[in-house]
Length: 208
Image (cartoon, rainbow, N blue to C red; front, side, top):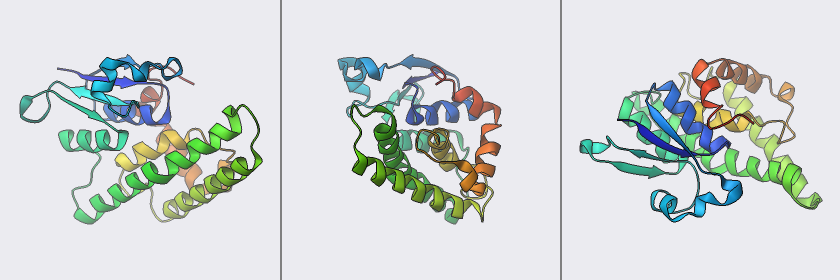
């Protein structure tokens, strides 16, 4: 049985398509056009009550029962537990993986999303917001760079934390960030970008 992936071409959506490709899980793609408000449809709201992509339906969930999962971080943890992949066995490394996953969920994603909104999509220029979120983007990339100066990946081995962070870093130009200023992020970024499953996952459901 395949996993149904409800997604759109956003960093959060691509976390899951990358993970599914890395884990070699069979899945079907159900595009949810957020530009047209399809995330507010009744059928999708039963899967994702917060009306956000991504979400999955796994027909072969726990005890063989169908289960739906929303929120990208929760989906990554679910898939890692399901497959035994990309989550360290060592307790300390596992905790660190979850720390960096939560860092992405609570900061690196939301703050960078605000940065590229005010830099690219706001209907009028808001200097205060541009400065606030651009400065925070630079700070967060600095945090990431410091971590990667000591580790090949976020926790040494490649984990769901790297999978979660990469699609956001892939829009560094949208954030007004020059990766040349963050050499450790640049080294990590190029390494992750070369992975075949990352390349295929970044094209779901379309490339932009």
